[in-house]
Length: 336
Image 1 (cartoon, rainbow, N blue to C red):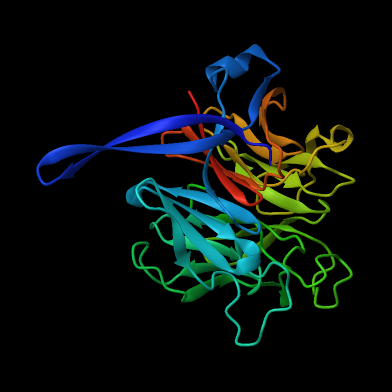
Image 2: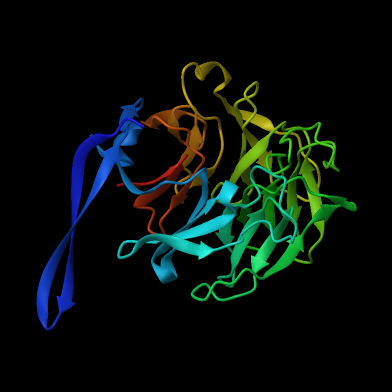
């Protein structure tokens, strides 16, 4: 990665022996902002760069800001590990194993957890590639243990491929995507694949699994727009590098195109992957070349340009900070 050494210095006052000491923390920065529409001026400052707050991972994914613990959780999918980052202590192992808990060695290249989220009771929920299920960690956030309760692991008696990303609505229903990336061959020809398609599903509050669509070739990131009547789903298919809209309901629905980046990929790393939508309907979506920022109507407002492939993003509770998993790096970006 090309690093731009324009350090941002953070000052923290630490009480020690009844005196105030000042600790200087310096982060390397990277990236740049491409401004496409004036509306971006209200979202991110000109000249903003991304702080590299952690690095050294095989493929970082699933960032989740946990306000109650002032920590960022994120998956390193190939190493079957969830890490915890805090301002004070940096990044440390939080949970291992995270996505595959079998006794035999996994033959998957990406056996770990992917998307992470909290349920309505503040429990950690994981999209588990290796276990091929949505699961709740059966332990408090501040005392993590690799014990899990399955929320769903099959549709019509057939095992999921590898649940990838998920989102809850206000009613407690869980929506998720199920591409094949956690399978040994990571494709539709994998002999362990039991479902012919790669679906988008909903888990009702009674645990019933409902198929919402089977027509997105590589469903990946997923988020709900304000009002929770529509959701946005990323397709990480190189031949259909698109974002799709889905109506939220109880039956199958036909996706409509939100935006296509299929013809805007040349020379850029990454595909449509993880995404988040803020309370104003602004979309922050990983895609070719970094983070794409859309308004709710699919207009590109700007991009956060990054050298390495970007997998996913998370917003802080106040929506003033964007966290980004960027291949081997984890980044932090200040918003307005």
